[in-house]
Image (cartoon, rainbow, N blue to C red; front, side, top):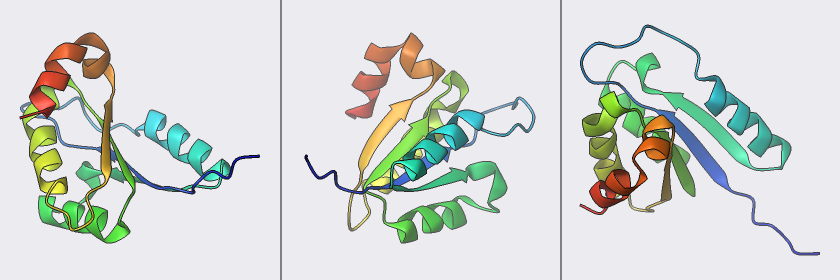
Length: 117
């Protein structure tokens, strides 16, 4: 039987640009976090809307020292998400960054091309 490394995973919902769609609970991230926890991994969900500033959100993410950061991407969140990705890439211990969500499913090639900037 192979031993699976236990991961520290941060699941992130960032801010939208322009007009938002109200406040909702990011159930998909909570489901993923619960599954990861059940499998023995350490997972947190960080909803940027619940932090007073970008810096406090980023500070929490940095102090968690994740192995993997999963980011939900919506079309109206491009700029904020890529700004966040660039900040994460400056961490002392740079985690793997995984993007998902409707925009990734709909525009895979554009997301990949932009993420390499």
